[in-house]
Amino acid sequence: MEPIDSDNYARIHSVESMGTVDGPGIRYVLFFQGCALHCKYCHNRDTWDMFGGAITNVDDVVNKIMRYKNFIIPSGGGVTVSGGEPLLQVRFLITLFKRLKEHGINTAIDTSRNV
Image 1 (spheres, helix red, strand yellow):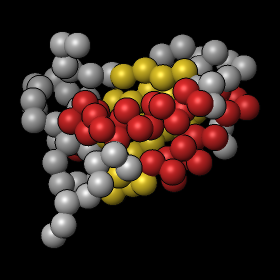
Image 2 (cartoon, one colour):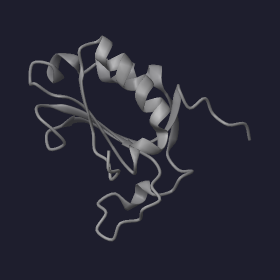
Image 3 (cartoon, helix red, strand yellow):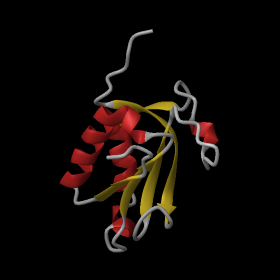
């Protein structure tokens, strides 16, 4: 199997299109697939598998998020990435956040990393 282009593709577990608990306002929440920590009290154990989830293109993700822009921006919301551990797919994350910033979308990361 050939490696994926990690700037433009990531393993995504699931999304929540109108989240209200993962940051201010209405948020589009992306749950990334993969985590090596396996924390005892993890709320998303089904995201741990490094090879699960759907391989998703950044263009598709941005296009889906833009459908909710008229709800997200007026509410003071944005996009939150969670997981799993989203920083395991940091190249995709950088590409995604740059694209979202071009559209004036606020971003947040829910990570276990000490950054």
